[in-house]
Amino acid sequence: MGWNEGYEIMEKQVIALYDFDLLNKEVLNALMQPFCNRDIDHGGCYDLRTKDGKSADDVICFIIEPERYQKAIDEFIPNPKEPDYNEALHDLYYEITRREWNFW
Image (tube, rainbow, N blue to C red):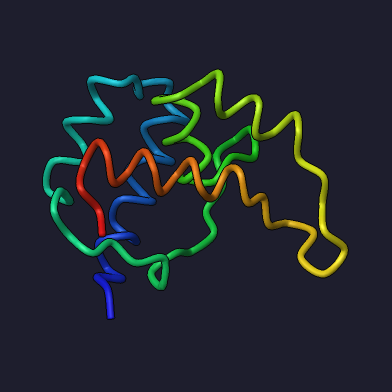
């Protein structure tokens, strides 16, 4: 079982800073330091969205890997069984969070 509250805290901070146009790579890296080497679990997700409709996972991918984020969005073909699940975006989020902050 992962740290649900950690995701909840991180999600709120990422969304708020992005909406106030204060989030860049440096700020995001500083924000993520308390969560490094932890089992951040989506069980704490409130499905918050930015003013332009991004989830916290989207924002993280957009800030760290903007070209790959856009490619994952542009090439997304919904599966009728799971129309909101973008596997490329999901994989990118996990790649980034493991590489940058050692989420597990």
